[in-house]
Image (cartoon, rainbow, N blue to C red; front, side, top):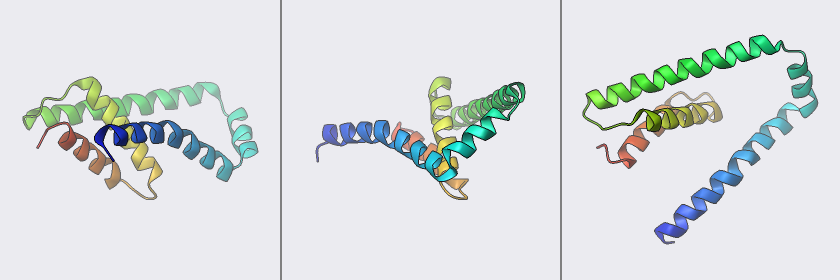
Length: 115
């Protein structure tokens, strides 16, 4: 498999895989149960929780980028935010995982040329 073919396959996997994973989670949890839980929730508290979680993860991503820069790596804040949030998703998908996201971030740094 050539490099370009592999890249295209990964792009297709990302585009198809994410919705399939989400559909699997919804199916396992039960769409009706999810809908009832969302309808019974207070929108203000949901938004406040989402905002706090997003800001907390964004500040952790920027702290991670600063650590990488301190170690001599050139890391753009936008790149760091993207990689960090992907790592959070990896942590959420792997059962009982916290190390998975750390490994993902380290792999991304290595892949980006930071040895």
